[in-house]
Length: 125
Image 1: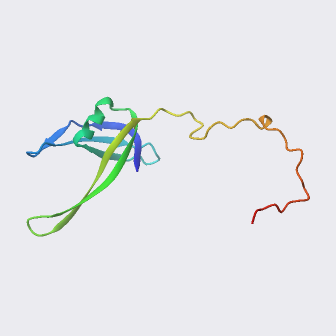
Image 2: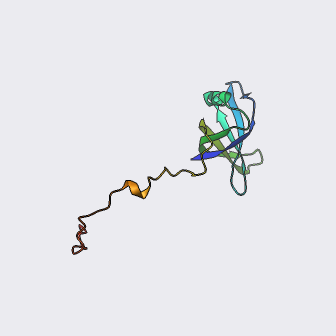
Image 3: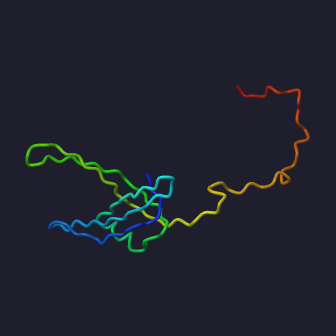
């Protein structure tokens, strides 16, 4: 899965626990009718991937959805979701034509001259 948008915030790398677990968060704002502010976390060695990016930059982030179960001291089970990034790349602003490749003009194609109009049932099945 992926998230695409403009970087709103890049957090500092945080270190947790005695084993040195590292986490860094980035917020990306999608560019659609109802923009969403999506927080994506990068963990361990992936935190360094954010070093080459800055706020305001258009990016595409490859993500995994993660879910955890936790039982609190009162015995209640709680569930948590996170969005974990594993790759990030800059996205260039595209031309108004969108994602479609350019189509050559119809004059570039030669007209068919040997069309057999009598044989209109040439399907292989």
